[in-house]
Image 1 (tube, rainbow, N blue to C red):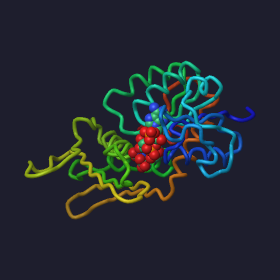
Image 2 (cartoon, rainbow, N blue to C red; image 1 turned 90 degrees about the horizontal axis):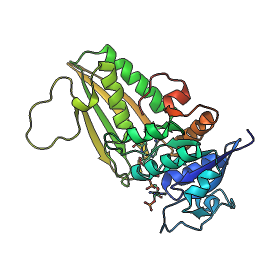
Image 3 (cartoon, rainbow, N blue to C red; image 1 turned 180 degrees about the vertical axis):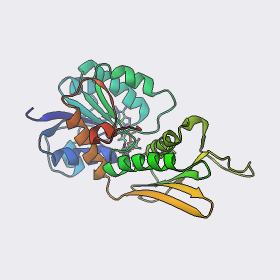
Length: 273
Ligand SMILES: NC(=O)C1=CN([C@@H]2O[C@H](COP(=O)(O)OP(=O)(O)OC[C@H]3O[C@@H](n4cnc5c(N)ncnc54)[C@H](OP(=O)(O)O)[C@@H]3O)[C@@H](O)[C@H]2O)C=CC1
Ligand SMILES: O=C(O)C1=N[C@H](C(=O)O)C[C@H](O)C1
C-alpha cells in the first residue's frame, strides 16, 4: 500500500481536528476528504488549516458519498445517528470504518454488525492502549473478587460532553460484569437520587462528573469490608485517542470484513467496545 486514503467525518469537531493532526503525523496515511454536516460553519474551510497543520488542499464538504467512494477508510467520532449512516456508506464502498462515537442506545450495534458484512468496522468507546489494558485488568479483578466487593465506575469529562455514562465507563462496566459472569444490563445502577433501597450486592454502579476541560478520567472501584481497590486511567491529551484511531485504520486495511474492537487491534484478546 502506498498511502491509506482516509476520510475524516465530523472534521470540525474536537476529535475531528485531532484526527487530522494525527493522520498528518503518520507515515502511510493521508486525509483525502473531510466531511461535516450540511449547514456547518466549517464547510469550505481547509481541513489542515482548521486543524492547525497548515494548508492541506482538502476543503471540508458535505459530500460523504463521493468521499467514501474514493477512499480506503473513514475516521468517525461524531454522533450515533451519523455513525449509523456512515457505516452504511462504508459498507457500500467496502472500506474501513473506525468508529469512536459514544452514546449508543441499546440495540444499535445490530445495524453496525450488518454493515460489517461488507465493511471492516473497528468500534471502541476508547481508542487508547491504557484504557483497553485497564478493561482487561478490571475483568481480571472482578473475576478474582467475590460479590462482597462492590463495583463502582466513576468518570469525569469536560463540560461539553453530552452522553453519560461515557462510552469508556460502559466498556469498563461491561468488563467488570464479564469478569463476574453476569449481564451488565440487569446489574447496572446508573442514577441515584433521594431516599432509596440500600445498594444490592452484585450491583455495578456508575457516577458521572462533568466540568471544565477534563479530557477523560475513569476509575473502577472495588469496595470491600475494610479495604478498597481502585484502578484508574487519566487521559492527558486528546491526540491519544486520535493516534489510536489511525492505528486502527491501518490495522484494518488488509483485514476481512468484520466487526472488530480496539482490543483486536492491540492484540489484547477479549474485547469490550
Ligand atoms: N472512542 C474514543 O476514544 C473517543 C470517543 N469520543 C467520542 O467522539 C464523539 C465526538 O466527540 P467530540 O469530538 O468531543 O465532539 P464534537 O461535538 O466536538 O464533534 C463532533 C463533530 O461531529 C459533527 N457531526 C455531527 N453529526 C454529523 C454528521 N451527520 N455528519 C458530519 N459531521 C457530524 C459535529 O457537528 P455539529 O457540531 O454541527 O453537530 C461536530 O463537528 C463523542 O461521541 C465522544 O464521546 C471522543 C474522544 C475519544
Ligand atoms: O467525549 C469525550 O471527550 C470522550 N469520550 C469517550 C467516552 O465517552 O468514553 C472517550 C474519552 O473518555 C473522551
